[in-house]
Length: 267
Image 1 (tube, rainbow, N blue to C red):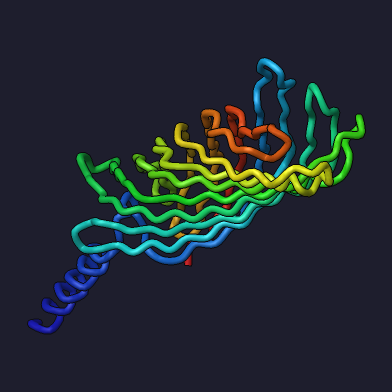
Image 2 (tube, helix red, strand yellow):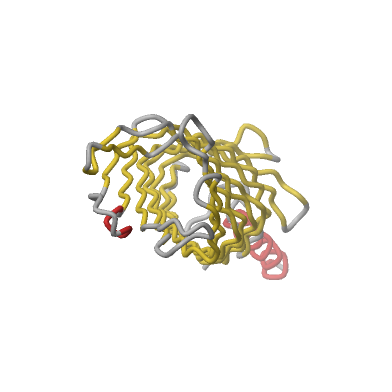
């Protein structure tokens, strides 16, 4: 009788301990993530006095990866990266059009944050960090009007500051919207004007003013994450540097908009 009474109590205690050990789905999950994304991309330099404006538009495909470390005090650190490629269409009011422009983006970010549980049905996770964005597009060749193009290299340095909220959506799903402001620190633009063969030297411009925004709405399970996202950059005009022949080159004011869908798997 004693053994029969004690055994259910032991099993009940073990089941309770196992249930307690289950991670809270509202907290940031640690480990590796790997996935892909598709997006639509638009870059534009608005028309101004003496400049007809230009834009690059098209669809992109990319690979994303991340590693997140968590601590018992609910502090987390995360490193994430992506590589994206698009074959874009160039259009300018002054130099015509060009198709199939190769365009690459590489980005890496490191952030630190903390999870807060103000209620049992949701969590708030503010974070801050450092980000680096690299872009390369190859406009070499001739446009529809015979204008000659060149290669462009772009670098952004910024501080991402954001907030992720997580809400329970049934037993298996969590809804996780994120909003972020990107504090622009500096930008560097390299234009290979020597590619034109017109006798100009390459231009290395610096950008000092700008800002960025990001938002996403992810749907999470234990191993899968899927949802839409968007990014936006608005950068002011750069300095002016000499390129020969008494001329100067400036990177005009511009904006970039990208939106798409992402799917990731957690290991």
